[in-house]
Image (cartoon, rainbow, N blue to C red; front, side, top):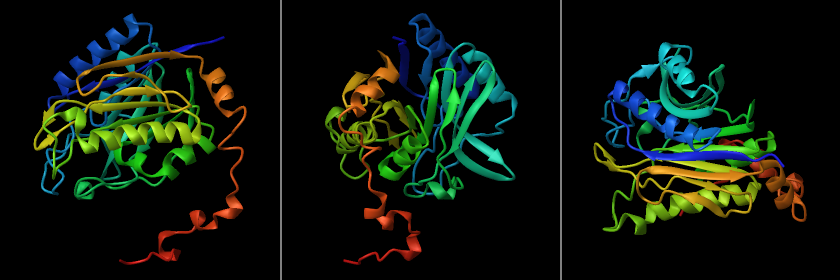
Length: 286
């Protein structure tokens, strides 16, 4: 039996990159001391998220994938595998991205595909989901709103991802926030997506999220580790912290898929519309 100790972070980050790196270094030290080998940091933890989703907010500092900041993150990661969100600049365009690093350098990079509200005023959209190999297994990454689309996680699972990491800056409800953050309807949606994506694909799921407030946004935290049966193994609740769990990933996947294999038992010929582009679909109007 070979177990993997993993952790997802709920923590606040802002425009002060030096303060962000200091917080990240502390979190990595905490994780390492706890025996963690895979650590998921939130969306936009390098430079903070947008101050609002109305289209007029200044974005975080743009960083190159091969730049000094990502090299610094990799050096901090050392013997851990670490995922973190940042604003990526490439070919004069900006993307809301997540990078996976270890002390050996960059292992994977994902550009957020699905953009909520007016996020497209700041970022270009990515266009792919791809799994990649790491020292702790085959991983997939997505960012925040990506998890609202079942195809995102399914694509990664079909590409062999054993663990999917979703990094987020997921806020509470804008129109009807609950006085008790734990009862907020957007927090419930956040949790439901985490459990459903893990269960329907029978994968291990790490969900990291921002906590606290930034600009007009109040984040729901709720970092967690979910097993392939959709059961929450560790959860920070609505406060800052580390959700830490240990699991034999290969054994957990085999056990979950032994009788009812959701990937194995698919019938793609029965739902051909899933392969059609948006323009080809008959979308009803109400």
